[in-house]
Image 1 (tube, rainbow, N blue to C red):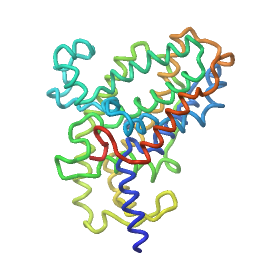
Image 2 (cartoon, rainbow, N blue to C red):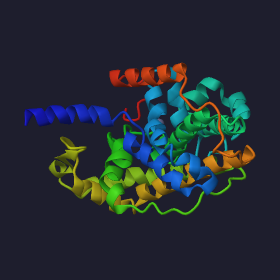
Image 3 (spheres, helix red, strand yellow):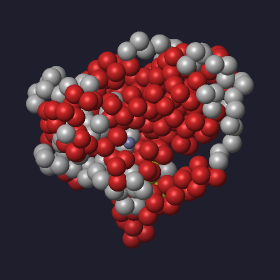
Length: 322
Ligand SMILES: [Zn+2]
């Protein structure tokens, strides 16, 4: 039992550090590949291993680079009430009104996605295989983060309402329990996004609007279950850990009316559509004739460093599970 408790402690420490969880980010990039047109699929499918493995590089980077954290969220409720019109959607106007420091403190995820979109489009234009893969994997991460309601709200881990742990409950425990066997990933096809900025802002506003439901449903569920039934020793990745019990997770998911599945499906659709849009905007370069197809020494060193810092386990800046 002692060993079990130790594993549990280690794993709880581990799970609280990732946005959408490592597993879910990998799944979102993975499923997005199948929404692409054949001209893109011929390149993305053989590289699906890279796209899933590197889906979590941005989270690992939070352990190595202090400025990385702000790219993953936006506490938009800092800027008043829905739809937060006090916050200019244009970055330069927002900087003028609030300063770079304030914007970074409360997160910049929609603007960062647009920056990554510019980089990905450029990589397609230059037919640079290595950069296409890197930016595809990473923009997938940030887009997925923008779909998580608690990434769009100050009370991001229920810390203001005594609901600590809700962040990982929503974005890791529920999908890990249900996604593989019960969720439907037949999503259709990627679309061309005429206005990526408008698209991602509206997704972020949906997240912000849903945050209250995420918190309220958990509070409601917690009143319907005995405190000692909330947690249980159950298996996670083959190891016995103390976590939110299956019964409690199912109760919560029922109250959410499958919101987690819906947001995951919307993430997948958005990721594929951003990839597709970048490729179209770059003039639809043939993806079977690319250059620069191997990782440079600097890339390999960067990846090693990310893994090293991540294993040390100290987030620089905000930790999702704080
Ligand atoms: Zn993240």
